Length: 105
Picture 1 (cartoon, one colour):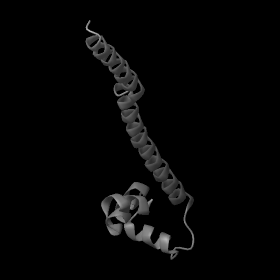
Picture 2: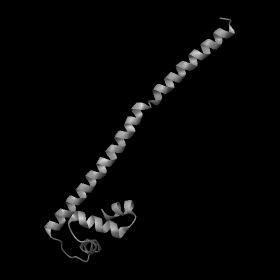
Picture 3: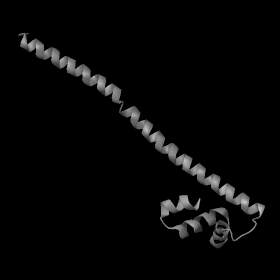
Picture 4: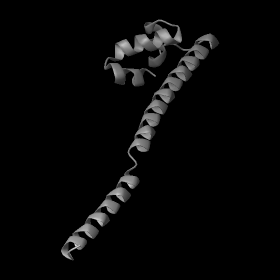
């Protein structure tokens, strides 16, 4: 979790403080836990960390779903296949008119 947050903030210490707040602990406690200095954690702490992780994953999924929805909306607006067919039809009409002009019609 700390790595993911630090990628967005660019600062590992502020990321650790942010994650610690979300887990309901102090950043020093989280740092000791990550470094292995704490031999045992309580059940309450483990549950808080797991819940914070699930919240983070839900936010990431919602963000990615929003991006996917935006891209799909662009697909509906810009249907490339439809444009290709329209261009081909216009080219065919243009060629017909050129041939008609050449033939004197």
